[in-house]
Length: 410
Ligand code: SAH
Ligand code: SF4
Image (cartoon, rainbow, N blue to C red):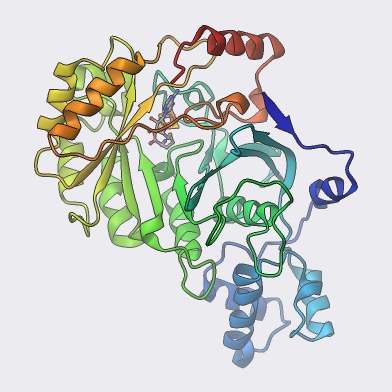
């Protein structure tokens, strides 16, 4: 059962009130150089002051997390007004916030149209655990790829998210969790007992991040900037279905941790499960992994492997997996398949998942089984879809029935 926020409570109503649609250009998601240029081009900051103003703004935007120029107290009133006249730093509208009974939160954000387009909606998920809190961020609305077990893959690509929209997911989540200085955590929220509430991010939401490389790169470089949001690159993981040409660039130009959605150990099966394999087959994918910049035993690649009953879950498959990864510093993440209405697969039996995990453990790989989180609010891996394609009531009921019947239940 999911807990939807009580929107009648005054605080919640204020917090979720839509930001006014703004036609003004945003300052979020710009590099420092772009930010300086924007201020000078608008004629509100003289060139020789640009560097200092950029530093001030960077601090307010990314350390203090303000979303209103009026709160930038060390900037003169006149300049604040000029900034507000030219630019926006508003957060996106939160259409819905759901809280699972395990503390997982899912937000549905609405972003304004870009150019002639329509507003779009995307989902972002927060997963609190002992000692860390992970935010699962989307990179696209829908996906061009059609992995046969993935719900997002049934939704056509609407558009890429901008760097601003990718960062907005992190900024808004930190707002809602009280994860900026001087902000209180909402009463009753489940968050790590120490440290930052959002301590890790994974690019594992909707979309294929490497088909939106430039925006993802910009956003992640800002998220890891030491004078701003300051997330360590070791706590940022980018997951790809295997866009080989951009894998090297990910290591070289962004420097974050890499996860590969592997799911099969031979081309015939992977062609069916992850069709991009037809373009970039396993041999090329494995070479790209071996060549990943910075790869070492301390910086391993995570291989994600979804457990599909009678499809890829035999001990022969486990053996082939160990063989395939030989020589690559790797972790293997076994993901119990999360069902969705219309999916043609079942999750492997729990006993089989454990046998599979034991085999690869014995071969020397850490192989955690990813505990499904937030299934009751459809927040688990591969269950995300934007609200424009939200489940009809009948589909929700079908899904609940599947859960009760135990399909895919861990
Ligand atoms: N497009 C990227 C990142 C988003 S998908 C990628 O494919 O890697 C994030 C992870 O969830 C991927 O490993 C994906 O294969 C997995 N996934 C998708 N649908 C799933 C489902 N129904 N059950 C379990 N995992 C799923
Ligand atoms: Fe797209 Fe990743 Fe889903 Fe494949 S698994 S359809 S690449 S989101």
